[in-house]
Image: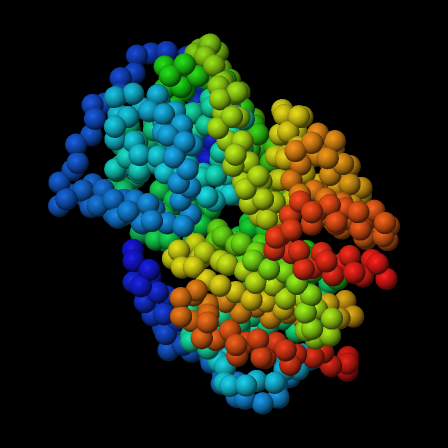
Length: 197
Length: 383
């Protein structure tokens, strides 16, 4: 099956879910936003916040529409919490956050999450970064198993008071990643963790 | 067939398998080479579907295109397939799960997770022979006709590892794909093909036993792993029947040294993929076995150390430290061994040792993706 045909099917299914009322999309407009309870960012442009049943602990945003590009936002994941949606019938490994994790272990955890379906991940860069205080930034390539599409991704993360704050943006290497990466980077640079309520 | 399906089916076959062992040496003749069926027939349509998937597979970024390894595995398949050799086309696929499959048009997929687990040529031949057994018996065509009435087509496609087409890993699909009788036939034919090709049939039982030990290592235990394990004879029973079959078909070689020589260049990549699966208990069972078989190979203690470090249960850091040190002692260890030692000493707040190992890592891998992060640790340790 050609990739374009597959993409059409996935998009068609997404449309059907939306039409069936199973999903909703909220516009996230420019300006100051608080994501979850403690992560604050400034948006330089609009995003779409997708709500689908069973998406898991991360907020899912997109610029172009799923499954073209995807931004996962973790706002205060606690020790022991799983970073992805749990499939009750699956015997696949769950990947859970531990508050003692070092940056490379957190990246490995995300790698495991992103490759649960057999996709391939390659770490391109891992470096210290200012994100929600003292954090880290990583770049990666992902070949999606379902359709062989090559994606590029960039992520930021930080552990604050034992909770994980992270953002992962990925999009097809051709066209879409370059188009939206600057907007994502701008958003990540403004991220800050608010004090616990 | 996928790893779980393979083992599950293996268990499923156990009950009715013993009587077959006695007749293992009966003359079995392979059918003549298959002719491409009429496209208008159901079988012709299936071939066309598989042809299309094979074209996709050739272009896939998951294809492992190393000519030498591919030729080597193709030769093993050819030894087993006999006069059907020209119709068998082996495709190596980078996916860290135990899986091999064969489609009715001759497309054979062999996943890297299977090659990592095989200890010798004969063990790979056991799996390939089993799949060729399905092919020669045209089980997929029988199954196609059966599932058409049961709306199980997606599961049926899982037989051939068409994960893209069905949009999932097919981890469960294969489990129910072939029936007991088909599995029994494929095992018997596979053992005969192994024997005729000069392989030690006893290695077939080792394959199942190794898989069983990996699955047992999982927290939930093998009986809870799937309904089939709960309701069908235990894997050990099947192992016994395969051993009985091997006694009927004695002799043969394992091809261990040739196997090691051919897969050695890929071990590091396959082990990295195995580690990143996050199935720590299974990986530890696998690597413990590998270390016993090849105690001189530094990649195995290195890989086990990485698994221990990532699992991070009580006592795991100590176990990781010992394995990293063993890899260094053996020599030829990957640069990441020193990074791992640096991580452990950093956690232990042993700044001097952490610095020394991080520096050694950067000397050996100056362009590593995480070099900037490691330099930041060095800076922090200098304070």
